[in-house]
Length: 455
Image (cartoon, rainbow, N blue to C red; front, side, top):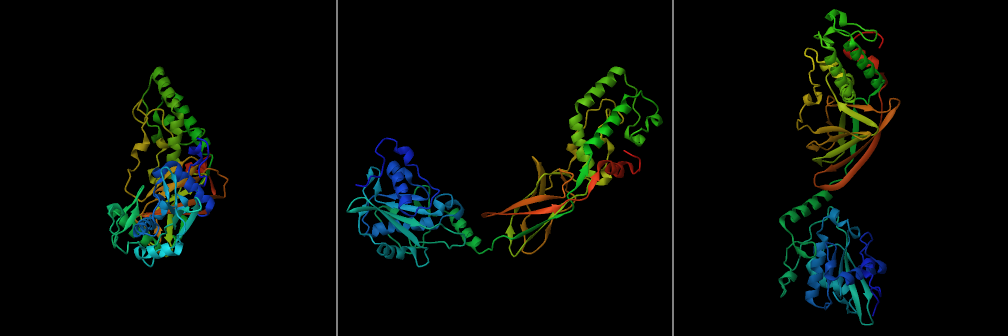
Protein backbone atom coordinates (compact mmCIF):
# COMPACT_ATOMS: atom_id res chain seq x y z
CA UNK A 1 0.00 0.00 0.00
CA UNK A 2 1.37 3.41 -0.96
CA UNK A 3 2.15 5.61 2.04
CA UNK A 4 0.16 8.71 1.26
CA UNK A 5 0.04 10.34 4.67
CA UNK A 6 2.66 11.12 7.33
CA UNK A 7 2.93 8.55 10.10
CA UNK A 8 2.36 11.06 12.96
CA UNK A 9 -0.61 13.25 13.81
CA UNK A 10 0.73 16.37 12.12
CA UNK A 11 -0.79 15.62 8.71
CA UNK A 12 -3.20 18.56 8.84
CA UNK A 13 -0.43 21.04 8.20
CA UNK A 14 1.41 18.83 5.73
CA UNK A 15 -1.74 18.18 3.68
CA UNK A 16 -2.48 21.82 2.91
CA UNK A 17 -3.21 22.12 -0.80
CA UNK A 18 -0.87 24.30 -2.84
CA UNK A 19 -3.10 25.81 -5.56
CA UNK A 20 -0.31 27.97 -6.99
CA UNK A 21 1.09 25.02 -8.98
CA UNK A 22 -0.05 23.50 -12.25
CA UNK A 23 -1.56 20.11 -11.33
CA UNK A 24 0.43 18.07 -13.83
CA UNK A 25 3.17 15.59 -13.02
CA UNK A 26 3.50 13.07 -10.20
CA UNK A 27 4.72 15.49 -7.55
CA UNK A 28 1.81 17.87 -7.98
CA UNK A 29 -0.73 15.04 -8.17
CA UNK A 30 0.64 13.46 -4.98
CA UNK A 31 0.06 16.78 -3.23
CA UNK A 32 -3.55 16.80 -4.44
CA UNK A 33 -4.06 13.18 -3.37
CA UNK A 34 -2.54 13.77 0.05
CA UNK A 35 -4.89 16.68 0.61
CA UNK A 36 -7.96 14.75 -0.54
CA UNK A 37 -7.19 11.77 1.68
CA UNK A 38 -6.69 14.06 4.65
CA UNK A 39 -9.92 16.06 4.39
CA UNK A 40 -12.23 13.78 2.39
CA UNK A 41 -15.26 15.28 0.64
CA UNK A 42 -14.52 18.66 2.17
CA UNK A 43 -11.75 18.98 -0.40
CA UNK A 44 -14.30 19.56 -3.17
CA UNK A 45 -14.32 23.06 -4.65
CA UNK A 46 -14.90 24.75 -7.99
CA UNK A 47 -11.54 23.40 -9.18
CA UNK A 48 -11.43 20.00 -7.43
CA UNK A 49 -13.87 17.09 -7.39
CA UNK A 50 -13.53 13.72 -5.65
CA UNK A 51 -15.09 10.39 -6.62
CA UNK A 52 -14.99 7.15 -4.65
CA UNK A 53 -13.83 3.95 -6.42
CA UNK A 54 -15.78 3.49 -9.67
CA UNK A 55 -16.11 0.91 -12.38
CA UNK A 56 -14.17 2.67 -15.10
CA UNK A 57 -15.82 0.62 -17.84
CA UNK A 58 -19.41 1.57 -16.97
CA UNK A 59 -21.63 4.14 -18.68
CA UNK A 60 -22.37 5.70 -15.29
CA UNK A 61 -18.70 6.47 -14.74
CA UNK A 62 -18.32 7.94 -18.22
CA UNK A 63 -21.32 10.20 -17.56
CA UNK A 64 -19.87 11.39 -14.23
CA UNK A 65 -16.51 12.20 -15.77
CA UNK A 66 -18.15 13.93 -18.73
CA UNK A 67 -20.29 16.05 -16.41
CA UNK A 68 -17.20 17.20 -14.51
CA UNK A 69 -15.37 18.13 -17.71
CA UNK A 70 -18.37 20.04 -19.08
CA UNK A 71 -18.67 22.04 -15.88
CA UNK A 72 -14.94 22.77 -15.80
CA UNK A 73 -14.94 23.91 -19.43
CA UNK A 74 -17.79 26.35 -18.76
CA UNK A 75 -15.99 28.29 -16.01
CA UNK A 76 -15.17 31.99 -16.17
CA UNK A 77 -11.50 32.47 -17.08
CA UNK A 78 -10.81 35.16 -14.50
CA UNK A 79 -12.26 33.15 -11.64
CA UNK A 80 -10.68 29.87 -12.76
CA UNK A 81 -7.20 31.42 -12.98
CA UNK A 82 -7.08 32.00 -9.21
CA UNK A 83 -6.37 28.32 -8.53
CA UNK A 84 -4.12 25.77 -10.26
CA UNK A 85 -3.46 28.33 -13.04
CA UNK A 86 -7.01 27.67 -14.27
CA UNK A 87 -6.84 23.86 -14.36
CA UNK A 88 -9.46 21.72 -12.59
CA UNK A 89 -8.90 18.20 -11.24
CA UNK A 90 -11.17 15.19 -10.81
CA UNK A 91 -9.72 12.53 -8.45
CA UNK A 92 -11.16 9.02 -8.87
CA UNK A 93 -10.64 6.23 -6.35
CA UNK A 94 -10.59 8.12 -3.05
CA UNK A 95 -13.03 8.12 -0.17
CA UNK A 96 -13.09 9.48 3.35
CA UNK A 97 -11.21 6.57 4.92
CA UNK A 98 -8.43 6.40 2.37
CA UNK A 99 -7.31 5.92 -1.22
CA UNK A 100 -8.55 2.54 -2.43
CA UNK A 101 -8.08 3.39 -6.08
CA UNK A 102 -9.64 1.72 -9.08
CA UNK A 103 -8.52 -1.38 -10.94
CA UNK A 104 -5.45 -0.84 -13.02
CA UNK A 105 -5.75 -1.05 -16.78
CA UNK A 106 -7.83 2.03 -17.71
CA UNK A 107 -6.47 3.31 -20.99
CA UNK A 108 -6.74 7.04 -21.63
CA UNK A 109 -7.82 6.67 -25.26
CA UNK A 110 -10.55 4.17 -24.35
CA UNK A 111 -12.01 6.53 -21.74
CA UNK A 112 -11.81 9.39 -24.23
CA UNK A 113 -13.83 7.36 -26.71
CA UNK A 114 -16.55 6.81 -24.10
CA UNK A 115 -16.58 10.51 -23.16
CA UNK A 116 -16.66 11.95 -26.68
CA UNK A 117 -20.40 11.40 -27.34
CA UNK A 118 -21.22 13.56 -24.30
CA UNK A 119 -18.59 16.23 -24.95
CA UNK A 120 -18.92 16.77 -28.68
CA UNK A 121 -16.30 17.20 -31.40
CA UNK A 122 -15.13 20.73 -30.43
CA UNK A 123 -14.44 20.02 -26.79
CA UNK A 124 -10.90 21.05 -25.67
CA UNK A 125 -8.25 18.49 -24.79
CA UNK A 126 -7.87 17.19 -21.25
CA UNK A 127 -5.15 15.32 -19.37
CA UNK A 128 -4.96 12.03 -17.47
CA UNK A 129 -2.75 11.15 -14.56
CA UNK A 130 -2.37 8.12 -12.31
CA UNK A 131 -0.67 7.17 -9.04
CA UNK A 132 -0.30 3.50 -8.16
CA UNK A 133 -1.72 2.30 -4.84
CA UNK A 134 -0.71 -1.36 -5.02
CA UNK A 135 -0.11 -3.96 -7.70
CA UNK A 136 -3.78 -3.99 -8.69
CA UNK A 137 -5.08 -0.48 -7.99
CA UNK A 138 -4.35 3.11 -8.88
CA UNK A 139 -5.87 6.53 -8.33
CA UNK A 140 -6.87 8.27 -11.56
CA UNK A 141 -6.84 12.01 -12.25
CA UNK A 142 -8.79 13.75 -15.00
CA UNK A 143 -7.39 17.26 -15.49
CA UNK A 144 -9.41 19.92 -17.34
CA UNK A 145 -7.66 22.69 -19.25
CA UNK A 146 -8.01 26.37 -18.19
CA UNK A 147 -10.98 28.12 -19.86
CA UNK A 148 -10.20 31.06 -22.14
CA UNK A 149 -11.98 34.15 -23.38
CA UNK A 150 -13.41 33.53 -26.83
CA UNK A 151 -14.18 29.87 -26.24
CA UNK A 152 -17.64 28.70 -27.17
CA UNK A 153 -20.16 27.46 -24.64
CA UNK A 154 -19.85 23.70 -24.24
CA UNK A 155 -23.27 22.01 -23.98
CA UNK A 156 -23.85 18.35 -23.28
CA UNK A 157 -24.31 16.35 -26.53
CA UNK A 158 -25.98 13.22 -25.22
CA UNK A 159 -28.52 12.33 -22.53
CA UNK A 160 -27.93 9.82 -19.77
CA UNK A 161 -30.55 8.82 -17.22
CA UNK A 162 -29.25 7.70 -13.83
CA UNK A 163 -31.08 6.26 -10.87
CA UNK A 164 -29.67 9.23 -8.99
CA UNK A 165 -31.07 12.35 -10.63
CA UNK A 166 -27.92 14.31 -9.74
CA UNK A 167 -25.84 12.09 -12.03
CA UNK A 168 -28.13 12.37 -15.07
CA UNK A 169 -27.19 14.31 -18.20
CA UNK A 170 -29.49 16.08 -20.66
CA UNK A 171 -28.73 16.62 -24.33
CA UNK A 172 -28.30 20.39 -24.86
CA UNK A 173 -27.95 21.24 -21.17
CA UNK A 174 -25.19 23.62 -20.03
CA UNK A 175 -23.38 22.51 -16.90
CA UNK A 176 -21.20 24.64 -14.65
CA UNK A 177 -19.08 24.05 -11.56
CA UNK A 178 -20.69 25.09 -8.28
CA UNK A 179 -18.83 25.36 -5.00
CA UNK A 180 -18.61 21.58 -4.64
CA UNK A 181 -20.59 20.02 -7.48
CA UNK A 182 -21.45 20.26 -11.15
CA UNK A 183 -24.99 21.43 -11.91
CA UNK A 184 -27.12 22.99 -14.68
CA UNK A 185 -26.29 26.66 -15.37
CA UNK A 186 -28.55 29.40 -14.13
CA UNK A 187 -29.57 32.33 -16.33
CA UNK A 188 -26.85 34.67 -15.08
CA UNK A 189 -24.21 32.02 -15.63
CA UNK A 190 -25.39 31.47 -19.20
CA UNK A 191 -25.13 35.22 -19.85
CA UNK A 192 -21.62 35.22 -18.39
CA UNK A 193 -20.65 32.46 -20.81
CA UNK A 194 -22.10 34.47 -23.69
CA UNK A 195 -19.93 37.35 -22.57
CA UNK A 196 -16.93 35.03 -22.47
CA UNK A 197 -17.54 34.18 -26.11
CA UNK A 198 -17.99 37.83 -27.04
CA UNK A 199 -14.79 38.94 -25.32
CA UNK A 200 -12.76 36.56 -27.39
CA UNK A 201 -13.81 38.28 -30.59
CA UNK A 202 -12.34 41.59 -29.52
CA UNK A 203 -8.71 42.56 -30.05
CA UNK A 204 -6.57 43.64 -27.11
CA UNK A 205 -7.07 47.23 -25.99
CA UNK A 206 -4.57 49.66 -27.51
CA UNK A 207 -4.99 53.08 -25.96
CA UNK A 208 -3.31 56.38 -26.76
CA UNK A 209 -3.49 58.84 -23.88
CA UNK A 210 -2.24 62.43 -24.02
CA UNK A 211 -2.45 65.43 -21.73
CA UNK A 212 -4.09 68.62 -22.98
CA UNK A 213 -2.80 71.77 -21.37
CA UNK A 214 0.22 72.20 -19.14
CA UNK A 215 1.69 70.70 -16.05
CA UNK A 216 2.43 73.92 -14.21
CA UNK A 217 5.39 74.91 -12.12
CA UNK A 218 5.22 77.79 -9.65
CA UNK A 219 7.75 78.96 -7.09
CA UNK A 220 7.61 81.00 -3.84
CA UNK A 221 3.89 80.42 -3.25
CA UNK A 222 4.23 79.97 0.50
CA UNK A 223 6.58 82.94 0.74
CA UNK A 224 4.17 85.26 -1.06
CA UNK A 225 1.14 84.08 0.89
CA UNK A 226 3.07 84.67 4.11
CA UNK A 227 4.00 88.15 2.92
CA UNK A 228 0.38 88.96 2.13
CA UNK A 229 -0.73 87.61 5.46
CA UNK A 230 1.84 89.76 7.30
CA UNK A 231 0.54 92.76 5.44
CA UNK A 232 -3.04 91.95 6.49
CA UNK A 233 -1.94 91.67 10.11
CA UNK A 234 0.01 94.93 9.87
CA UNK A 235 -2.99 96.78 8.50
CA UNK A 236 -5.29 95.39 11.15
CA UNK A 237 -2.86 96.26 13.94
CA UNK A 238 -3.00 99.95 13.04
CA UNK A 239 -5.53 102.14 14.74
CA UNK A 240 -8.63 102.65 12.57
CA UNK A 241 -8.27 105.64 10.29
CA UNK A 242 -10.34 107.01 7.41
CA UNK A 243 -10.50 104.61 4.51
CA UNK A 244 -8.12 106.61 2.35
CA UNK A 245 -5.41 106.35 5.04
CA UNK A 246 -5.64 102.55 5.21
CA UNK A 247 -4.58 102.13 1.62
CA UNK A 248 -0.97 101.64 0.67
CA UNK A 249 1.96 99.72 2.06
CA UNK A 250 5.66 99.28 1.79
CA UNK A 251 4.87 95.78 0.47
CA UNK A 252 1.82 96.10 -1.75
CA UNK A 253 -0.45 98.67 -3.30
CA UNK A 254 -3.95 97.22 -2.73
CA UNK A 255 -7.34 98.66 -3.63
CA UNK A 256 -9.31 100.08 -0.71
CA UNK A 257 -12.14 97.60 -1.43
CA UNK A 258 -9.89 94.85 -0.13
CA UNK A 259 -10.20 95.99 3.46
CA UNK A 260 -13.38 98.04 3.39
CA UNK A 261 -14.01 100.63 6.06
CA UNK A 262 -13.82 98.84 9.42
CA UNK A 263 -15.60 100.22 12.44
CA UNK A 264 -13.51 101.03 15.52
CA UNK A 265 -13.12 98.10 17.91
CA UNK A 266 -12.13 97.93 21.53
CA UNK A 267 -8.61 96.77 22.34
CA UNK A 268 -10.02 93.54 23.79
CA UNK A 269 -12.12 92.88 20.69
CA UNK A 270 -9.12 93.51 18.45
CA UNK A 271 -6.92 91.11 20.43
CA UNK A 272 -9.58 88.40 20.33
CA UNK A 273 -10.13 88.83 16.61
CA UNK A 274 -6.41 88.68 15.85
CA UNK A 275 -5.86 85.63 18.06
CA UNK A 276 -8.75 83.79 16.37
CA UNK A 277 -7.37 84.69 12.95
CA UNK A 278 -3.85 83.56 13.84
CA UNK A 279 -5.10 80.25 15.22
CA UNK A 280 -6.46 79.35 11.79
CA UNK A 281 -3.33 80.25 9.86
CA UNK A 282 -2.71 76.79 8.36
CA UNK A 283 -6.34 76.46 7.27
CA UNK A 284 -6.40 79.97 5.77
CA UNK A 285 -3.14 79.48 3.86
CA UNK A 286 -4.23 76.12 2.45
CA UNK A 287 -7.55 77.57 1.29
CA UNK A 288 -5.95 80.74 -0.02
CA UNK A 289 -3.36 78.73 -1.94
CA UNK A 290 -6.09 76.72 -3.69
CA UNK A 291 -7.88 79.89 -4.80
CA UNK A 292 -4.67 81.67 -5.78
CA UNK A 293 -3.43 78.85 -7.99
CA UNK A 294 -6.91 77.90 -9.22
CA UNK A 295 -7.53 81.35 -10.70
CA UNK A 296 -3.92 81.96 -11.68
CA UNK A 297 -2.87 78.79 -13.51
CA UNK A 298 -4.23 77.33 -16.76
CA UNK A 299 -6.37 74.21 -16.72
CA UNK A 300 -5.57 70.80 -18.16
CA UNK A 301 -7.52 67.98 -19.79
CA UNK A 302 -7.03 64.55 -21.33
CA UNK A 303 -7.53 63.11 -24.79
CA UNK A 304 -7.88 59.40 -25.48
CA UNK A 305 -8.01 57.29 -28.64
CA UNK A 306 -8.79 53.56 -28.61
CA UNK A 307 -7.21 51.99 -31.68
CA UNK A 308 -9.51 49.63 -33.62
CA UNK A 309 -11.43 48.70 -30.49
CA UNK A 310 -14.73 49.68 -28.87
CA UNK A 311 -14.35 50.06 -25.09
CA UNK A 312 -17.60 49.81 -23.14
CA UNK A 313 -18.00 51.92 -19.99
CA UNK A 314 -14.26 52.50 -19.51
CA UNK A 315 -12.76 53.34 -16.14
CA UNK A 316 -9.44 55.06 -16.83
CA UNK A 317 -7.25 56.19 -13.92
CA UNK A 318 -4.35 58.55 -14.66
CA UNK A 319 -1.74 59.13 -11.97
CA UNK A 320 0.48 62.22 -12.24
CA UNK A 321 3.45 61.32 -10.09
CA UNK A 322 4.77 63.90 -7.63
CA UNK A 323 2.04 66.35 -8.61
CA UNK A 324 -1.04 67.90 -7.04
CA UNK A 325 -4.36 68.68 -8.66
CA UNK A 326 -6.57 71.66 -7.79
CA UNK A 327 -9.93 72.92 -9.01
CA UNK A 328 -9.63 75.23 -12.01
CA UNK A 329 -11.29 78.60 -11.36
CA UNK A 330 -12.19 81.31 -13.86
CA UNK A 331 -9.67 84.18 -13.57
CA UNK A 332 -12.60 86.62 -13.59
CA UNK A 333 -13.70 85.10 -10.28
CA UNK A 334 -10.44 86.01 -8.54
CA UNK A 335 -11.03 87.50 -5.07
CA UNK A 336 -8.26 88.75 -2.87
CA UNK A 337 -10.14 87.90 0.31
CA UNK A 338 -10.15 84.25 -0.77
CA UNK A 339 -6.37 84.36 -1.05
CA UNK A 340 -5.78 86.21 2.23
CA UNK A 341 -8.49 85.73 4.79
CA UNK A 342 -9.13 89.12 6.44
CA UNK A 343 -8.88 89.37 10.19
CA UNK A 344 -12.39 90.77 10.07
CA UNK A 345 -14.99 90.53 7.37
CA UNK A 346 -14.98 93.47 4.96
CA UNK A 347 -18.10 95.10 6.44
CA UNK A 348 -18.98 93.36 9.72
CA UNK A 349 -16.69 92.67 12.71
CA UNK A 350 -16.25 89.12 13.96
CA UNK A 351 -17.77 87.43 10.93
CA UNK A 352 -17.13 83.70 11.23
CA UNK A 353 -14.56 82.50 8.72
CA UNK A 354 -16.47 81.38 5.67
CA UNK A 355 -15.64 77.97 4.26
CA UNK A 356 -15.10 78.70 0.60
CA UNK A 357 -15.21 74.99 -0.22
CA UNK A 358 -18.98 75.14 0.23
CA UNK A 359 -19.34 77.20 -2.92
CA UNK A 360 -17.55 74.73 -5.15
CA UNK A 361 -19.71 73.24 -7.91
CA UNK A 362 -21.70 70.21 -6.93
CA UNK A 363 -21.03 66.94 -8.82
CA UNK A 364 -22.51 67.22 -12.29
CA UNK A 365 -22.55 63.63 -13.37
CA UNK A 366 -19.52 64.60 -15.42
CA UNK A 367 -17.27 61.75 -16.59
CA UNK A 368 -14.13 63.23 -15.02
CA UNK A 369 -13.13 63.43 -11.34
CA UNK A 370 -9.87 64.47 -9.76
CA UNK A 371 -8.18 64.30 -6.38
CA UNK A 372 -4.77 64.31 -4.71
CA UNK A 373 -3.61 61.08 -3.06
CA UNK A 374 -0.45 61.40 -1.02
CA UNK A 375 2.25 62.74 -3.29
CA UNK A 376 0.36 62.11 -6.53
CA UNK A 377 -2.52 63.62 -8.48
CA UNK A 378 -5.20 61.29 -9.79
CA UNK A 379 -7.69 61.90 -12.59
CA UNK A 380 -10.44 59.34 -13.26
CA UNK A 381 -12.32 59.19 -16.57
CA UNK A 382 -15.64 57.33 -16.77
CA UNK A 383 -17.27 58.18 -20.11
CA UNK A 384 -19.95 56.00 -21.63
CA UNK A 385 -17.48 54.51 -24.13
CA UNK A 386 -14.37 54.96 -26.22
CA UNK A 387 -15.27 54.39 -29.87
CA UNK A 388 -12.73 52.87 -32.25
CA UNK A 389 -10.28 55.47 -33.59
CA UNK A 390 -12.48 58.37 -32.40
CA UNK A 391 -10.86 61.07 -30.30
CA UNK A 392 -12.41 61.50 -26.83
CA UNK A 393 -11.49 64.74 -25.09
CA UNK A 394 -12.23 66.16 -21.66
CA UNK A 395 -12.64 69.87 -21.00
CA UNK A 396 -9.74 72.04 -19.87
CA UNK A 397 -11.67 74.02 -17.28
CA UNK A 398 -11.94 71.32 -14.63
CA UNK A 399 -8.61 71.08 -12.85
CA UNK A 400 -5.06 72.41 -12.66
CA UNK A 401 -2.06 70.07 -12.37
CA UNK A 402 1.02 71.41 -10.59
CA UNK A 403 4.38 69.69 -10.23
CA UNK A 404 5.46 69.51 -6.59
CA UNK A 405 9.09 70.00 -7.55
CA UNK A 406 9.34 73.46 -9.16
CA UNK A 407 12.59 72.43 -10.83
CA UNK A 408 11.23 69.27 -12.51
CA UNK A 409 11.52 69.44 -16.29
CA UNK A 410 9.01 66.60 -16.76
CA UNK A 411 6.74 64.32 -14.78
CA UNK A 412 5.76 60.68 -15.14
CA UNK A 413 2.15 59.81 -15.88
CA UNK A 414 0.90 56.23 -15.50
CA UNK A 415 -2.57 54.94 -16.32
CA UNK A 416 -4.67 51.82 -16.04
CA UNK A 417 -7.91 50.97 -17.83
CA UNK A 418 -10.69 48.51 -17.12
CA UNK A 419 -13.92 48.11 -19.05
CA UNK A 420 -17.35 46.78 -18.24
CA UNK A 421 -17.55 43.00 -18.47
CA UNK A 422 -13.81 42.46 -18.83
CA UNK A 423 -11.48 41.27 -16.07
CA UNK A 424 -8.34 42.41 -17.91
CA UNK A 425 -6.45 45.53 -16.82
CA UNK A 426 -4.58 47.51 -19.49
CA UNK A 427 -1.72 49.75 -18.31
CA UNK A 428 0.59 52.32 -19.80
CA UNK A 429 2.83 55.27 -18.95
CA UNK A 430 4.36 58.34 -20.55
CA UNK A 431 6.26 61.47 -19.57
CA UNK A 432 5.05 65.02 -19.98
CA UNK A 433 7.31 68.11 -20.07
CA UNK A 434 6.42 70.81 -17.58
CA UNK A 435 5.65 74.43 -18.39
CA UNK A 436 8.22 77.18 -17.64
CA UNK A 437 8.56 78.10 -13.99
CA UNK A 438 6.31 80.94 -12.82
CA UNK A 439 7.17 83.18 -9.87
CA UNK A 440 4.27 83.50 -7.43
CA UNK A 441 4.87 87.25 -7.06
CA UNK A 442 4.47 87.79 -10.80
CA UNK A 443 1.40 85.56 -10.83
CA UNK A 444 -0.21 87.52 -7.99
CA UNK A 445 0.43 90.86 -9.64
CA UNK A 446 -0.95 89.69 -12.99
CA UNK A 447 -4.15 88.35 -11.45
CA UNK A 448 -4.91 90.75 -8.58
CA UNK A 449 -2.92 93.95 -9.02
CA UNK A 450 -2.13 94.37 -12.69
CA UNK A 451 0.88 96.46 -11.62
CA UNK A 452 4.64 96.39 -11.89
CA UNK A 453 5.27 97.16 -8.19
CA UNK A 454 7.83 94.90 -6.53
CA UNK A 455 6.43 92.23 -4.21
